[in-house]
Image 1 (cartoon, helix red, strand yellow):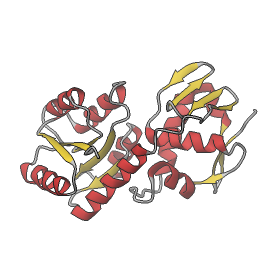
Image 2 (cartoon, helix red, strand yellow):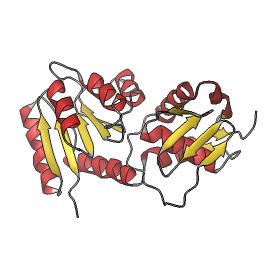
Image 3 (cartoon, rainbow, N blue to C red):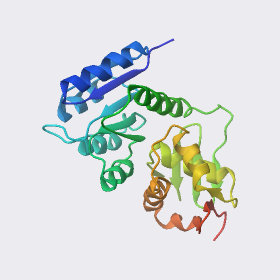
Length: 231
C-alpha cells in the first residue's frame, strides 16, 4: 500500500520535528518546509496528499499559501490542516473560507493532531466515486460526483472539498432539510474542528461561488439548509 505523503510547513524547528517524527511513526511519508515560499514550491513539485500549515510563516504567510494551493488546479484536491497559535475566531473563519479542511490551535495534543490528519485523509479518499455514478441535476446545477466537478448553467465552478460535499448531499436529497450537525459530519467528518459558525462559513462561501444559482440553496431558520429543485 502506497504511503500517504504529507508536507509540514512550519518555521518552528521543534514543532516541525515533533510533527514529522510522529507522523512518520504513523506510517506517513513526511516532507518539511520552514517557510511559505519553500512550502508552496515543494507542494507544486511533489504530489502531496495533504499539507499541515502554520499561519505565521516567514516570506509568505500561511493564509497566502492556503490561497495559492486552492487556486492551483493541480493542488486543489490537496488536504489542508492549519496548525497555528492564532486562535481568534476571525482567523479561524478566514482559514476555513480560504479552503482549509480543518484548523488546530497550538499547543496541541499529538493524538489530536494525528486524529485530525486521519480524518482529513479519510475524506479525501472518499472523493473518487463509483464509475456508474451519474451527474446530479438540480435546476441549473450539474454535479458530477465521479469527476468531482460542479457546473452552473454549463460553467464550471471550483469548490473546496467541504463545499462540494455539502452541495452534493443536499442535491442527492433535494427538498429535504439537512441540519447543521448533519452537514458538519458530511462535510468534515466527526473529528472536525467545532465552531458555531463553521457550517455557515462554508455555505456562505458556496453561495458566493454559485452566483445566481445560490437562490436554490435555502436556509431553514433554526434547523439547517436544503436545496430547492425549482424556484
